[in-house]
Image 1 (tube, rainbow, N blue to C red):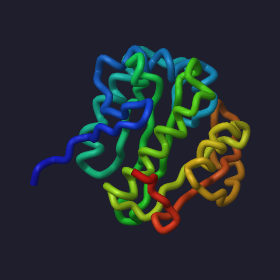
Image 2 (cartoon, rainbow, N blue to C red; image 1 turned 90 degrees about the horizontal axis):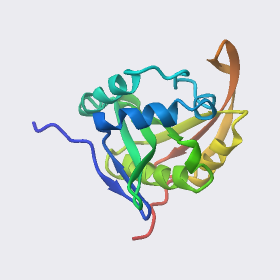
Image 3 (cartoon, rainbow, N blue to C red; image 1 turned 90 degrees about the vertical axis):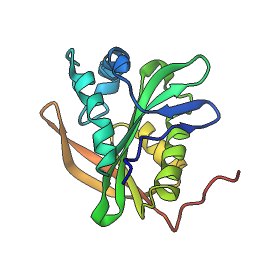
Image 4 (spheres, rainbow, N blue to C red; image 1 turned 180 degrees about the vertical axis):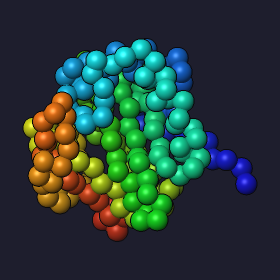
Length: 186
């Protein structure tokens, strides 16, 4: 059996591609920005040297084992890394949790929605997933608007479900089923 390689996915303005170790410094700078990190349960702050490289090294093996798909979000013109998007998969349930972050200089430009549409499409049409879901901190409604634009339905609030910097956070949960998904017209 041939190992499946991480995909390249093109959209109108973006290239979603595997991360390279050369991206580590940009990841550390963009994701480590306090304003970005405070909207995530998992992005470290401060973002120490070497953390991004350690994170990047695992992507290929995690995809080959069917655990996750993690891609760099690259703005096409000029070509530069602006964020990340992922699907954390659970094979036995045929579902995946989507996560993403966009560097602060690129907020409010529709990049998260554009990347999200491409990854949801890949998840349903190529990976054969049954369900894709995502959550956001209730205090970050912009992320919820992205999920709504992707066709995800609000499924409820998970009260104090996560913790960030020793404070419990309410998480809003959204999801979409393959039967509800409407693929973009070619």
